[in-house]
Image 1 (cartoon, helix red, strand yellow):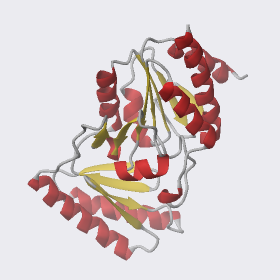
Image 2 (tube, one colour):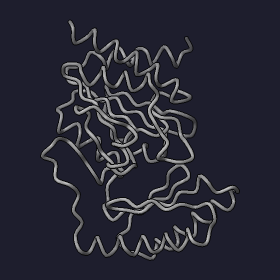
Image 3 (spheres, helix red, strand yellow):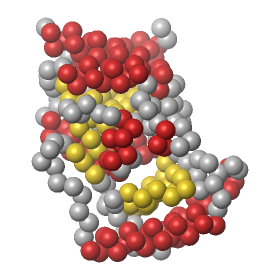
Length: 261
């Protein structure tokens, strides 16, 4: 194994022995390969199996923390009932059957309508762009735009339009620009999950710039893994979702042995 592989193996062995483990995972680009149409994404079989194993283990909590709206995340990820969910970069959460759905204030609803109008106008002017509605936001998708320069122009045009709306949080991602009227991020989501579960250690894996807030929220003893290329604050990196499947499988094996005593 390479030096990085050796170090990651040691980190997995350490975190697997913690008292209460939280395994928090982004979905797209981590559990599932990136695809042109978001509705076509599905988790890799090996990753899905490893998450199911982890979710079944004592003192082990699994969570998906995604930019997707919760309904979309449920559709593509088919999570186990035990798996906690954070969607829309933290604006939506599901931590059990008593979880209240997201409710916008009248002011937020009006602001969201304005943001949707702004993004709709950009989509109408730029072929290949798509619009996605979320409960607290609206997303410009440019993955299907044929020319990178055209995608960049559409993104910047949407950014300018949205900058005129006071109170809208704009977040960049891979071939997406998202506007939200609820100000939160994945780092806040991880902090909330840690407090909710009483986790003594967290493993978090992500692939996008939106996951950097999550990496920054981790503490000594936690494990941060970047999937794919690009600059990152994560301590470890794997090249692809397929390589991350092996990481999850190893974590599940180590954790099962640890909780069995």
